[in-house]
Image (cartoon, rainbow, N blue to C red; front, side, top):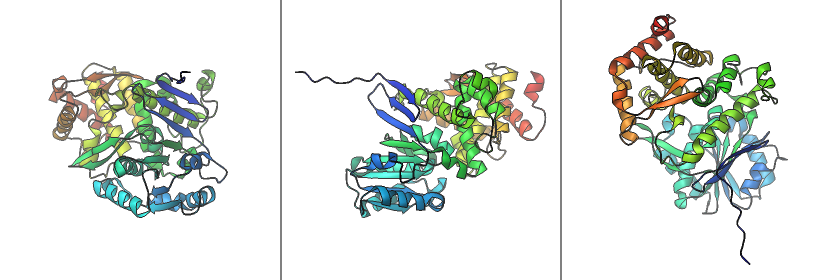
Length: 408
């Protein structure tokens, strides 16, 4: 008798408790959405850890807010002596190989073997660090992400990239290492400061601009989503969406859009990626500011620059350009930073991306609300066009009329 093997078609499949991704190249993983992940009667996390040694890593803020409940959960659900918790120093400036070595050393000290699990509880920095450490520890062990920030839940938490900043470049070193499980609990978002919520909204706006005009409109009408109680717009309900509230709609839609975009190109064999919108000028802005500008803020500034460039080059109309820039502002995010948004530094950012992407620029720019195209060559962006776009954003940030809008 011949064994029958079940073959799952590639794609992203959603259900009430999350999403499952099956990439064409064979990688499969799950992103769960659950309520009260650390409640002792919630079996989800314990099920993923069952029968394995677990070392959990979390930053000091997450430890203060959620550490006690995490320890109680592990103590209740896992066998005695099978788990330990390590607190890591936080911050983007600690996203280095030294921190990865520290994680590996702590794992070894805790007796983590090749069947063990590294558990990351935190935002993007913690998950990137632990994911990279898991990719290289004993040549690869399982890791689980419990994403506590909005950026983590809609961006880092749904992808397979891990990495650290090195050689003066953001995320220069890293690996593709899918998490064994990635868990999102929306309750964590209620403990976040406003700045972190806004950074997450920047990543959500990114997906709306390039992929989904309906999500864009929802953000326009509910710019304080996740920050205060917000009613679901009637038109969204009439369209059969948002029945579980606008927060749930925004969160799930952003996750699904990201997963769908990542799925066919999970390991980036094609370097032209729509999800790199906001990630050409942004990494240089972030690094040059010495991380004074947070990641979500650098993404927002990059989106504004790219959008204004598209308008200067005749790829998007004045009205749509103004809507995108205004949405970024309404979300409480910057569109310009005078100390880093200089023509010289932004040209350097273009050159760095061109070199990193195999001598092709692949700059993502919107050509409408919910649609985007690529500018592939450095010659596609004249210096004068970049200077004009930056000047328009400087005027907008200063509260003056946008000269390009006035001209349009």
